[in-house]
Length: 270
Image 1 (cartoon, rainbow, N blue to C red):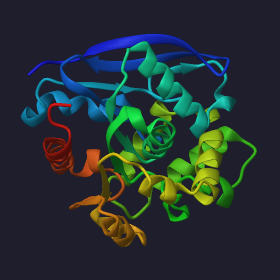
Image 2 (image 1 turned 30 degrees about the vertical axis):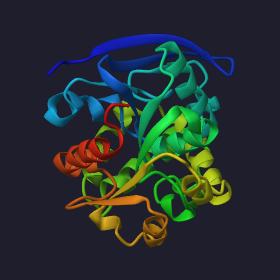
Image 3 (image 1 turned 180 degrees about the horizontal axis):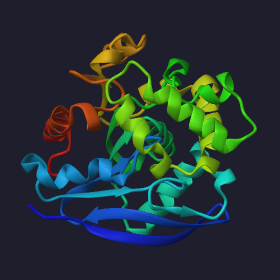
Image 4 (image 1 turned 90 degrees about the horizontal axis):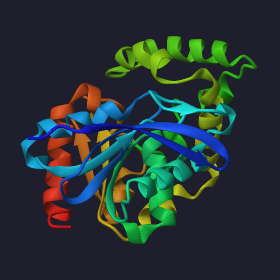
């Protein structure tokens, strides 16, 4: 097994100076590119180096602007399209042409729009509870349901509500939000997620993608209304036991096993 390298990458995306913190490993096959969710970081995926079925596999993960160790000079510009443009820029920096996508939540929505824009580059796509329908905005829609002109106050209240949510890993997730997200980026991200989920025809985009796809969801979210439709279209649906929205926190062993099995079936030698 091998570790990974840490990078700081200076970029300009849509005129905004960024410094993106990334972890990266060269290796066999086209790389797995991981896009984290809101309130998470690249470290959600660092354990790839500890799973023998993925031993030696090339990968890239990075902190989105306004998140983790990345720096953004204008947090008000952060939105889902901005995150897509950032992903395209970081892929260009590392010289990655074709790749396998894995995206969680906000990162799943970002990955979906990236795959829709450049389907020829994406060899496979694992969507871990990424937004594909309006019902997926159970976190981001709070920007509408609990409006505030004070970014810090909204974020504090959001964290307090999340800490008490009756779902696996909610308190664990809430406990680190202040350290992982800048409050000034929250409103733009959430409004953009709601806009795309309500009006972006995301399900049509997801069903229309040409590459192998898997949709992963927690056992607590088995009631998502669109899961039968995904199965009917031949998309692999993976339920993670003992889990809500965060398989990387509640059941990472199952998450990594499912990722490895999917790539054994669809990603080998590519």
